[in-house]
Length: 293
Image 1 (cartoon, rainbow, N blue to C red):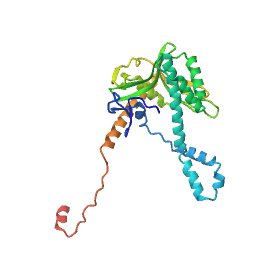
Image 2 (tube, one colour):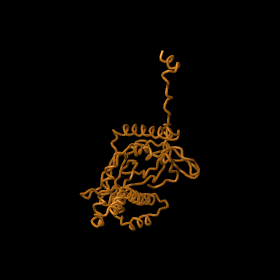
Image 3 (cartoon, one colour):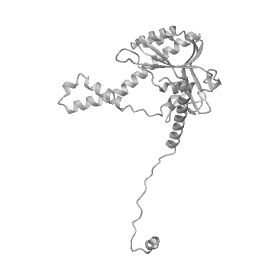
Image 4 (cartoon, rainbow, N blue to C red):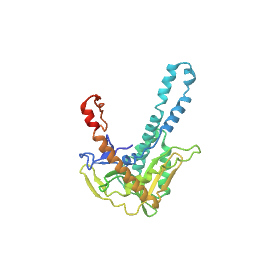
């Protein structure tokens, strides 16, 4: 994941400060959304098993407990390695998309270098499909990688793109996706709706990170919220259902409270403490008789 200039890694997840010299104050949008538990144990087990059964060294290791244990230990980290590789790929694709937007805005950009980084990893098809989508949808960027802040609820986040498409202002979140078995882009997770609606509800946008200069957020009126899945085969844009935005916003607000209470309990110290057994009572002790009466 990319690291915006005001974002900080903390014990409570990624948080934002008001300037580059400030301290973290509020959680990021993604940190709030991550409070919703998602059970990935089944996927992690599948990844480990798949790597082990496809390991060419497995046949030779049969009969050697030590070698089998070594292969199993290596396979157990398959999900983590896949996640890290996918995150790095997503960063490269997001960076390319940002540079394309900056170029269209007439700002300093490194589009060629970003494409070269994709080419180095044999990922230029992501850039090709993105360029096709950009042209087909007639994207006119208004702001790229823009950081927003909401004081009322207390959170901040960085949006991939604000653009005009078909005469409408759109808030856009890009997701890099792999392919399904039939060669199509994997679908977006519905949590992207929370991410987009939280961005829409921003109250300020960053102007100067070093100076801590902010201005009122001008794009929260009635934008179209788009999740855009970028894959090697195609780019699929999906609009958040306007009728469901309020429900997803309330869910985000609830998760923000979960984050706050989790931070409070974590910073308060141990919630459990040992207790010794009560003293053994002597049945002949007169005090026990008085207590019983």
